[in-house]
Image 1 (tube, rainbow, N blue to C red):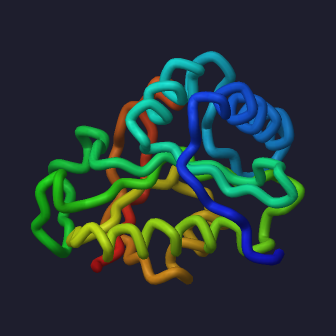
Image 2 (image 1 turned 90 degrees about the vertical axis):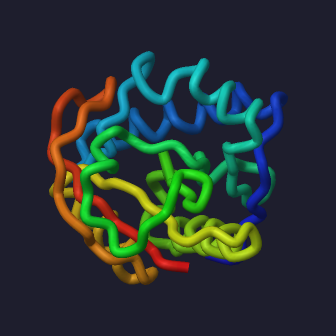
Amino acid sequence: MDKINIRAAAGCDLERVMDFYHSLIDAMKDAEYKPGWKKGIYPTRESIADYIAAGELYIGESDRQIVSSMAVNHEFNEGYRSAGWSVDAGSSELLVIHILGVRYDLSGSGIAAQMVRFVIDKARRDCMKAIRLDVIEGNLPAEKAYTKLGFSYRETVKMFYDDTGWMDFKLFEYII
């Protein structure tokens, strides 16, 4: 796919972003690899509104349509604390990618790579030490995509999220 326009979401984008995630959840209900998201549980309207208000939600658009979305901030699951990261970084020195989604019919088109490169550029501009994220164990397309973009697998940890409950997640890190 051609280059998408990536920008911070605004308050007026809330309904479109919710429609995007709900459509993605519906489209992936029978997919082999699922993100674990559930309508009304995560991402919620409140969590998306909070990300937008904090300037942490980014959308990728093509022809005025949302084709991707993600949240980027300094917050992470408690399970990250005991992980064997390759660089020592406090929360203010790293970025964490959350809820990165791409319109299902555009999977494999390079949109996720554009979104992640956007975060890498942002991390460099903001003088961060690393970017971190987690992937549900077994989500091979996501694991492969992040590794291809230069992320290193660190370890697998059991973590709790409202939408998944207790599950094993693979932790990945990109050193800036």
